Image (cartoon, rainbow, N blue to C red; front, side):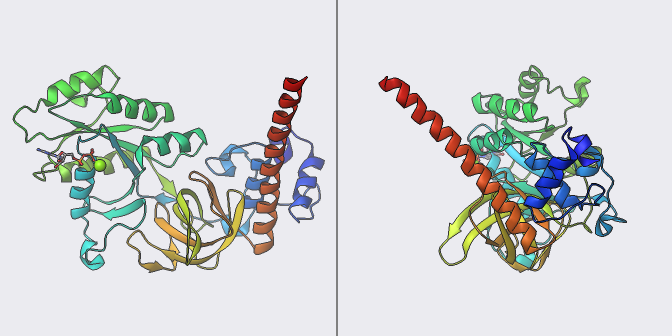
Length: 362
Ligand code: GDP
Ligand code: MG
């Protein structure tokens, strides 16, 4: 079934499975991670889980009987410099009902989770638009919606347009926060008019875009903004099954002197636990320790949780997929196969260059 779906020979899939150390026959039942990895190797992006995309039967017993539930939305705040992105995020963070227990522990990683009265939200703090573009070019969709911050006294500026382009190209819905409404020269209607030219027509003008008027400085409209985030999340029907093995995306990663390779991972489905084996990009590993966004040690993390993972064999790239696999052997085989492929590609690119050089000389 898998081979047919990918329009390749069954023998090729079997060969690939053997390469991963899985001895398979034609009618072998493969589990979901294996199928996902094989599909990835054949150049297929498995986005929504293998059931929809490749259509094979879900046969891994552990994966059956799971229950999908609403998961918190993952939000990115974008907009022109000085329009108030940081201020809005700070104002939102102050509403965090869990902030008390955290005792003022500051943000630790490039993504964080807020428990507001309206509901939970995960914010991804992309360091500038570049990271967003890079991730998107690598097919990594981590954001469910974008909050576009536009200052009411300044209107649509260059980076506002850039943000709209990125979000629209990625097909991510936009919620507009018209900020700085406390200012004397604030003109929210002008912002609405200007943004309408980009297809962001306000609801009260017959369009579909939600606008919230905020003053991050005076703490006005922040609760409404959070309520509207939840409203959009409900419309988007964001689902996840916490009983599955975890799958996620790398938000950022680096080499830490004491702890080795460390990655911030956004869990997109399932639950990640200490001791789980995983593949991430061309590396593998075992979860040696996890921390939440406030730097506190945790033992497990569910859908939409941003966490820091320790125990990677190398530093992956932002946007790399993080997949939990059954055991160490699988994790190592896949990462080996992948890094070999990367080297092959590099070699191919290298030999092309040397050929070009050769022709230059001739
Ligand atoms: P960012 O570059 O988009 O992250 O913008 P900041 O959050 O750093 O804000 C830029 C400047 O605008 C700062 O001086 C803020 O104090 C100010 N600012 C942010 N929000 C508001 C607001 O609602 N009203 C007013 N009057 N000033 C604001
Ligand atoms: Mg800022």
